[in-house]
Length: 251
Image (cartoon, rainbow, N blue to C red):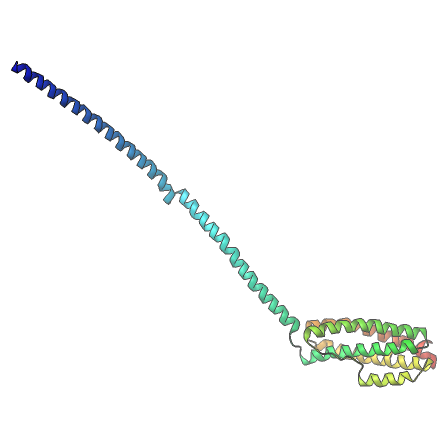
């Protein structure tokens, strides 16, 4: 009986030991599998993370950031440069358009304005007192052409800050007083001799001399525009003086 109990106890112990041994093997196997899975997971994660840090993904990200920054910063820099250039250009244009003229250029503007004013005033007198239709037509041309020329001179003068004369000079006021006392053929002759040939000859000579000395581009442009007009008026007056119309009628 005692041997049976002892044998039964050994069997029980062996069974328990075998069960614990099997459980341990299973636990170890499970732990090994878990470790392997973890290792694999870690390896997989590492494999995915590595490109993020040093592979193409990171390179693309870096390029994206670089491109984004570059695209944002370059236009800003260009805009800043453009703004600076625009302000500089505007300042330059303002300085060019409103800069103080030399005394010679300022005098040239005033001389042109004075000549235009004188011719318009004389032409208006001739429109009411001239006898010849040709003289009246010439006078009207003086009013139109010199009126337009005066407008151009006034525009440049305003731009440059130059104050121009607004009425005929003393010599032409005196001439106007004399013309007012004349009539008929005498008036036509006096007007064409003074307002036609004499005035335009003097103005043309002075204008040609001024054009060679003018420094400001705007003043030179308006002087260049005046020159052919004055020349045409002078030739017309000379031609009328040599024919049987206008001034020749009084001879």
